[in-house]
Length: 309
Image (cartoon, rainbow, N blue to C red; front, side, top):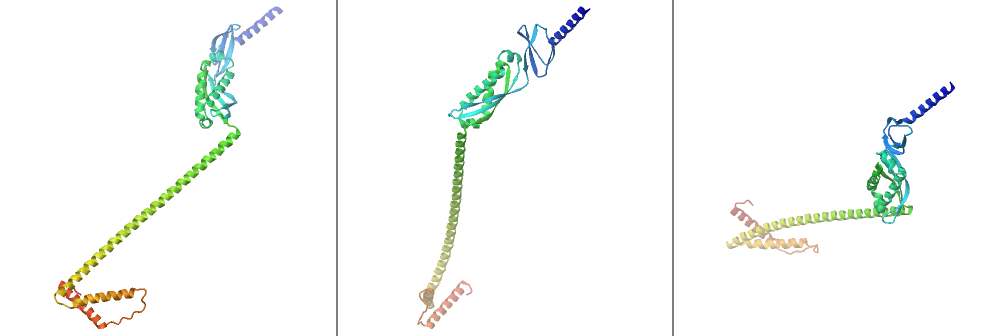
């Protein structure tokens, strides 16, 4: 009886062991490889699976979700011999658990070294200014190189991001001084351009003013010339009338010329600044007679031309 109980217990224990080793439940987002006598047999997808105890065993349990890999900081020398410290982060996903399990030993360490090597290669081919201003280009180049290198491992690299590029402190100070000098230079250039534009505007204004002034003087000269021309025409007509009167034997015409010259002379003497007092012993009667003659001539001219005087 005891032997039968012991045998039953042993069977139950053996059955429990067989069941626990034969039944496998794979979580979502994982892929397990099955090895039979040490050789790869198949890959278990998420869900409930059965394997042959003793003959089969679980080889590698691969995480098929996207994972983050921190890249340790390292020093890189740029193309212009500037030493900078940089670190990065890599995002990857295992697409083929078989390759990730059996094509590379220690996948995480291999990817870290691969990314670090490519960072030195990409950044080392750039100058410092280019390195600091082309972060997107650096990330794209790293992604292309690392993804291509990890393809035989069944890994898809989705992103490689440079987190920080840190030049030495003295180099940062030198760059700050250079930037300040560049900004001051641009400010001086802008100020000089502003002064030049202002000078051009002032010169254009003066030019326009001179043009307008010259046009005004030209118009005034034209009007003055027209006035002189009309005055000359009037004098010529008056001379013609007087000449006709003289030809007709009218002596009063001669008095007209004498009176005109007499009046002009008096006007010039009165307009002189040096003559304050004038003593002119003239015969007033003769002057009045000349003026009366002028009046008679004017009346005759008016009657002859039909113009009232």
